[in-house]
Length: 90
View (tube, helix red, strand yellow):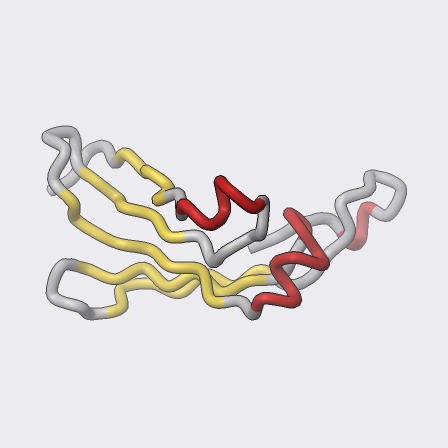
């Protein structure tokens, strides 16, 4: 059983040096710091760099055995409160 998780984004050196947005990857750890899941964003280069934080994505969460345990999808949406029907959702 896991009562708490810690999520750490893995930062790519290319992204730090150039500002060029790369696919986000995350380590999901328990309270002991052990990796229990990994998550990876599935988007193309153009979408990441043109749409920025409002971009659509698929996030696949994988356990230590390599099995996909959950998939999260976020469609392209507006981030303006002027269009409440188009706010972000996952």
